[in-house]
Amino acid sequence: MGYKAMIGLEMHCEASLTNSKVFSSARNSYSVTPNENIRPYDMGFPGVLPVVNKEAVKMALKTSMVLNCKQPEYMYFERKNYYYPDMPKNFQITQETKPIPVGIYGYVDYECNGEERRVRVNNIHLEEDAASSDHLYDTTVIDYNRAGNPLLELVTEPDFRSGEEAESFLDHMRCVYQYLGVSECDTKKGHIRCDVNVSIIDESLDPEDPSNWGTKVEVKNVNSFGGVRECIKYEIKRQTRAKEEGTYDTEVVQETRRWDEETGTTISMRSKVDAVDYKYFVEPNIPKYKLTKEWLDEIRASIPELAYDRKKRYMNDYELSEYDSNILVKEKKISDFFEETVKLGADPKEACNWVNGMILSYLNYNMITIDEIFMTPEMLRDLIKLIDDKTISSKQAKDVFAKVLEDKKEPMKVVKDEGMMQITDEGSIEGIVDEVLAENPKAIETYDPENPKALDFFIGQVMKKTRGKANPGMAYKMMKEKLDNLKK
Image (cartoon, rainbow, N blue to C red; front, top):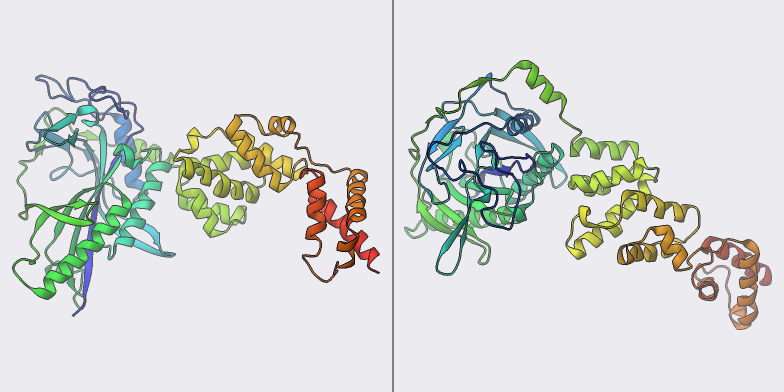
């Protein structure tokens, strides 16, 4: 008997690009200094009242529109009551039961292994984040910097069938949040976390019929996309084994588990019943308010060009390959760097080769972002121009690139300081070619015009004499003409 998986995701993304938190005036900014970005409201002091961050609501609504969701006429918030040490008020302001979230019943089209897939969106809602807990050897410390940050929770239907599909979807949504200007989506800063719901059913059953659904297991707070993929793979294997063996010890029960990256396994945390009573009620300190058509239209008009559209434009307008276009648009800031370079006059294909090649390699090797590199779009444009003008060769350009970053100098200054100006004077190159021929009579005797590599030795000698400054194309053409004439 075969089984298929039914996987749903609850993706949490901090709207990290608002200036303040969602219900307080505290700064919404990542900080390594604990408890730096807090106000009395974030700490649950008596008498403090929430004030809704309009920009956070706007970001949430904009995201819901991109997800093809329906927006409500009125917006509410609710209290979700529970005790956690990282929630000082002992309740969370969220959107859950009575109110309509910022978006419901949408869908997302994304690509996985070159094929387009679709996942249904149950809802996306805006809520406040909890503080972060650091579990040390014998104690736990709490950092309240994150408490109250605007958090978007995207809940999908169980439409994924594999870990690869879930990972591709998360990559797609990461791009959406970045391009919309909602979040940096930096997993190292905890901007994105994910809860994974996995169940398996007999492959002959219809997954659209809820009565066929298997026992759902929830895995909490998986903090990397690769972790989501591996977590799902493990759960599918674990639950399949439990179904096939049918023993008490391996029986699939409804529970909450956690993902352990070190062991590559999920570990049971607690059993879970069908519904937890959080005693939701409408937040009394935030009256419901109407979302006017004018404001919704204004938000919809502000949606920028997204990664998928940029990719198509790069392929159609710049004739870039799908592979190269995918790499360029994966990170918005990388794509913006490329866009600015082209806007300044660089050839798109050459700019793409440099960005996808040397620049991304440098970023990955040094584990930095495009914001931290010394090279600017203006410098890259100038470097490409130096090659196009034959001031330097393509090989020299790589040395210039390294020197620009090492010495923090402009490309042209590196070329001048290092004496790297390419020799393009025909008379000068011809003189060097003649020298090489005069010094290598035996090599001339063995020269075979039909052998494509026969010129390599001679060109190598020319480049050696000029310390790599001779224009390779001119040297090649001149050397070939002279050698062919000598062999006639």
